[in-house]
Image 1 (cartoon, rainbow, N blue to C red):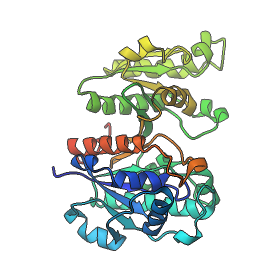
Image 2 (image 1 turned 90 degrees about the vertical axis):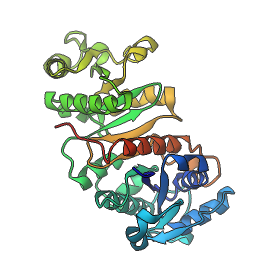
Image 3 (image 1 turned 90 degrees about the horizontal axis):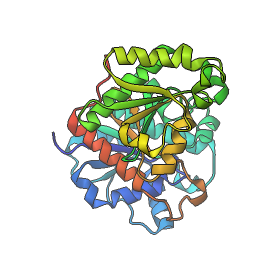
Length: 340
C-alpha cells in the first residue's frame, strides 16, 4: 500500500500534547514510515510553538477540506477542528473546556478512520479529570474507542522492546477488580494478546498470566480463591485452544529478568499490576495499543504532564514510537483483525 496516513489527535490542549505534536511534524525522518495528520486546533499549535521555541505547522486545513482531499496529501498537515480558542487557553490547568476539546479531536479521528479516510490513529495524552469536568462519561481513550467503534471484544496493551503487558481490567478502582474478573474475559484477553503478539513477532507467542493476589493466592490463603476459581480455569481453557500460556504466576516475581527473556507478553489482572513494571523499564519507548478494534489505534504511554506543559521540555519519543507502530500495523493490513 502507499505510505499510511496516520491521524494524530492533539490530546489535552493544556498539556504537552501540542508540543510533542509540533515535534512530530518537524521529524522528517518519520515521513518515510507514515504521513502524520495532526487533528486539533491550529491556532493553539501556533501559540504552543511560540511558547516552546518550535517551528509552527506549515499547512492547515478544515475538517471538511481534509475529508475531501485526504488521499491527495503529500506532506504533514494540521486539521483544524476549531474546538477551543487559543486566547482562552491556560496551559498547565485542568478545565472542562480542554476536556471537551480533546474529546472532539478523538471523535473526528475515529470518524475519519471508520470512513476509511485515514489508515490509523495515534493519540496524544488526555486528562481524565478534564474529561469528567466536561461531562464526558469515559475514564480514558480505550473506553472511548471501544464505545465509538461498537467493539465487543477489546483490551489495552502496552508494548515495548523490553516488556509487553495487556490488561483484563484497566481504568477501575482496586475494590472493583475482583468482581470484574471472570473466566471468559481472561480467555478473551489471552486470545487478543496472542493474536497481536503473533503479528508483531511473526510467530506464536509465549504468554504469562499473573495472579490477582499476593503470591498468586498461596493456594487460597489470600483473597477469595480468584486464582483457583477463575484465573487457572481460563489458562487451562486457553491452553486447550492451543495457546502457549503459563500461570497464574505471583505478580511480585513474574517480571524478573529471566522470565522477561522467555515471555512475549504478560496478561495482567489490573492497571498498575502491569503499568508499574512497564513504565519502570520502558517509559520512553512503550506504546499503548487498543486490541480488538476494527481500526488501528496506538498511543503514548504517558500523561499530560501539566507541570511542564508548553515549556519546551517534553520528550516526544513515545509519540514517535507510537507512530512507527501504527505505520507498521497499517502496512501489514488495513486494520487489526479481531479474534473470531
